[in-house]
Image 1: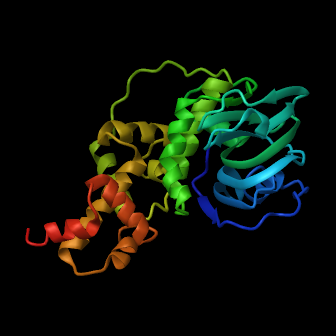
Image 2 (image 1 turned 30 degrees about the vertical axis):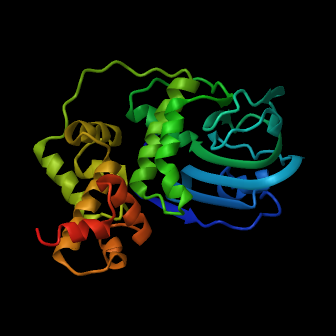
Image 3 (image 1 turned 90 degrees about the horizontal axis):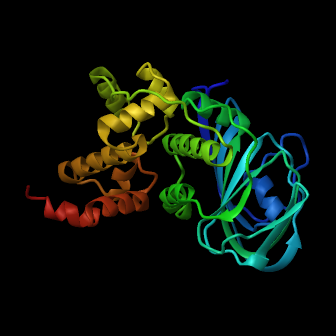
Length: 328
């Protein structure tokens, strides 16, 4: 099975006006502008992870106001799976489809309801607004890599589901929604972790794959722990992939991610946030720099992102924390 190569990059596509047509060339894939065209969504936001120009994983948010029921253009077929999360409850009469020749619709009208479908299967769809969806695109090459790295058996065909409750997908979506909502870019680490977690979950829950039994493993060795910390401190902007960090520690991506969590008690991205906040505190107490100057030095995209992360962790604003610690 193929593995994810280290030369990964992310691209952030800003909200755009409604696209007029769906691209019909062979390169059309179900994320970004192509997905927005299918849904005729006036607003979309997309972040993607690609390997040497070939997209493997993408997160696209689509939003639309009230509008009558319309038949959407046919999906372009692709060797990939699509997982859609309805961020707000979808009424039974708001969405229906013919999937592989059978009628399907809304199973549960709840927030964070999950739909999983195979893009190799034909589908006709009817949609009514308003809606607010977050779509995850998972390529076949990514799923094969996740299966190999996590010692998951070769999966069978996807068991498609429509608007069901899935607590794992819901929690993953909540964890990244704050950044997507505020237009903050999703960095490589966060996209990597989301792709690994979602890929493994989809394979086991919806594709009937099973994880091979394995003996417990320890955490990172001392040199690997120090190496991982140094790499993260040098790349506080998160512009590095799990694969690159794993290579630096002479491990596979999945073994590195598991070993990191056992060693540090948290995920790589959450530990990165912790290091960013340490840098912020050092600059708040050791300099007179403004928050707008501190944000990029600590790896945040802007002052607002810094303030949100700091307030969540410390239960107070950076300015108040600075005043309280000024004499310490």
